[in-house]
Structure formats: C-alpha cells, structure tokens
Image (tube, rainbow, N blue to C red; front, side, top):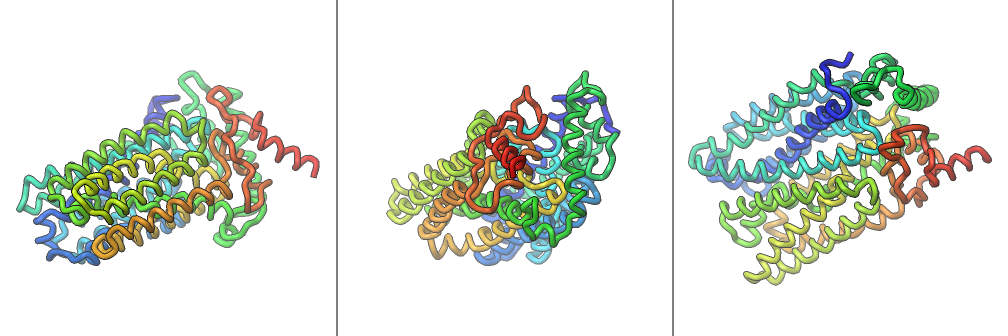
Length: 505
C-alpha cells in the first residue's frame, strides 16, 4: 500500500529529497571533524591529540561505515530498502548523541564507530532504493543531484565549525556542529513512512500487487495499475526476477563466483569506482582541509576555515554540471577525463609545495579548488551510481554492499595516514595521489562497460555476453524519456549484436 496522494514527478521528487538528505548527511559527516578538530576547546577536551590519534578519531568512523555495510548484507534483503535505511538512521541517532556528549577520547572513538555503522548501512541502501525506484533515463541525473548534495555537506560542516568558533573557549564550539547531524536524521525518519518501498524489491518477494501500485504511482497522476506501460515495466522486472530465481537463491559463495551472471566480475567492477573515489586523494584533503591549509602553508585556523568553506561552496555548484550531460556523455568518458584532470592537479599541488614560496602557496590553494571541481565532474557521481547499475537484482544488495565496504576501508586507510603524511611526506603525498589517479584512466577504458541510458535488465544482457576482459560496450545506450524502460536492448546496436549472437550460437 502506497501512503499519501503523491504521484508521478511529485512522488519521485519526494523519494529524491529523502535520499538527498541522506547524501547531504554523508558529506556533512565527512567534513565535520576536520572543521572542529583544530578548535582550542576540542583539543583541550581531548588532551591535544597527536597526529596518529587524530587519524584514529577520524578514521574509526570509516571502520564503523565498513561494519555497517557488512550489516547491510545481513538485513537489507529481509528488511527491505526502506526498513534498512530506517534502522541505519536510528543507529546514527544513538551515535550522534554519544559523540555530542563525549568527554574523553575513548567515548569519542566508540561513538564515531556507532555513527559510522548507521551511515554504512545507509550508503548501501540509499543508492539501491533510488536506482530501483527510477527509470533508467533519469537514474543518472538524480544521482548527480545526490552527489552535489554530498558536496554541499562539506562547506556546511566547515561554516558550522567557523560559526561555532565564536563560542570558544566553551566546548559548545565543537559539540554543536556534531549535534547538528540530528537535524538530517529527523528529516529522514519523518519522511520514510510516507514513501513507497522499491518496486523491484517487492517483486523479488512476490508482492506483485503492491509493486504494480508503486509503479503506477511513480508513473504519473493519471496512470492506473492496468496501464499497458506499467504492466510492461512490471513484467520486464518480473521476468528478470523469475530468471534469477530459476538459477537459485543467491549465496555468498555465488557472489564470489563467476557463473552465467558474471557475479564476481560485477563485484570487482562495482567496487572499482568506490575505490577510485578514495584513492584519488579527495578525503586526504576533504577530511582535513582546514588542517591542510594550516600545516602545509601556515594559514591561521580562521582563514583556513573560511577558504575551506568557500572551496566547498564552489565544489557544490560545480558538482551540478554533470546533471546536464552525464546521460549523453556516459559514465566511462566522465570517469576517464575526471581522473586525468585530478592527476594533473595533484602534480601541480606537489610542485607548488616543493617550491614553497608565498606565490606558490596560493597557487597550491588554487589547484585544491580545481581538484575538487574536476573530481566532482566525474569520479564523484560515477562512484556512487555505477555499482547499483551493473549488479543483478538477486545479488544487488550483497554486491553493492561489498563495493561500499571497499569504499569505507579505503577511506579509513586514507584518513588514518593523512595527518602523519602531511607532517612527514609533505609534497610527496600528492605525487602518490597523482600516480593513482593516472592509473584509473586505462583501467576504465579496458574493463568498464557503459551503463548510461541502459536499464538494469539491459546490463544483465551485457554481462551475459561479455567475458571478463576488454569491454565492447563503450557507448551510451538508447533509452530515452519517451522510450521509457521497455524491452531490454530495443534499438541499442551494441545489445542487438549480443542478442543476434545468442540466437545464432
């Protein structure tokens, strides 16, 4: 049963808004510790933590996120997408309360772990819920909006830390920005009961009437449950679900084997963009951006916060740009160009720090701005959408969760080593990021099939006919707003080749 009177674009907008608040919280959480860790009250309350302790306090959150992604393995198929998001949000509420009331290092470490567990569950389930609730022609565009909201979370946390600085030396200065996470959580928990479950998840669990009603509500104001387009869309997903059920229930062993659906290939390919996200070096900057400006070029805490906040605002606005072309250009091209540009920026950042004059220090700041911009034009949006677009329905939850787990483990390593690396490696740290970014270009070109304007069922067709190796699916598909999500592969030359090969084999 679908609650409320929202239909069509209004209902899709409501789902996107709820997902958007979750993504905004993702970004806020990634920046909030960096915004307060340099405040005198924070350093006083936690005995002036040394670099390794700073890395532990920051990075333990990512270990929690990893554990949350593992927990999502065990609960999402049973609880549903909405139910899992609700559980994850309540866990974050507990973690936020514990963080805000922390008086010693151990409590802060434990509470950030708890918060991370809830966030890890949500980072698995929010993208899946959205991907399964939208048609293929607008899934990418909606995820661009969510990526922009991740970007908005960074300056919001930075400016919150800057404003709270006025409360110094009171500990309210660092407690309030952390407590503000609760505002996002309340919005998510209030909105979830009025939004529908994923229709694909409903069909997977045999709830055909409910799924049909959800498809009709998503279709528009005048769309009924017996509309031919709705029935065709439902039947296409049913056919996919029945085929997967025919092959048997998904097990962990199946997830890690190839089989006719190429499960392990999809897991590895899905994890890749998540890891590209972290090993680009973005959170080496984002988590500690004010600290980076303070320790690398000697800016004051207040000026560092201001510059970091302005950078974050620009990052937010630029991250909207892929909305206008990601479906036309495709995931592959954007990922490759973004990685190449990020590599160039890191080279320039390293050179400027090596030369280390007043002029080059400000050029360093400029290339930090540019790095965030080019990152947001490709690596950021693609990393959050790719895995959910290539996983088969029956193993999608486990596959995406494995990808998200790789994201958070990578994030932990990056965040843990950054404070010490800033002090010890200095400019050499950014050479490492430059080399890693450059490596993403050939990896993407060789192995990553294009998902733009292809339905989830179209990608099943791609993977059934391509073996792990050089991909032949390098161009966007042919799904359009007018064409909807009809028969898989219709008017898609690359899929028609596979279908022809299947008929003549």
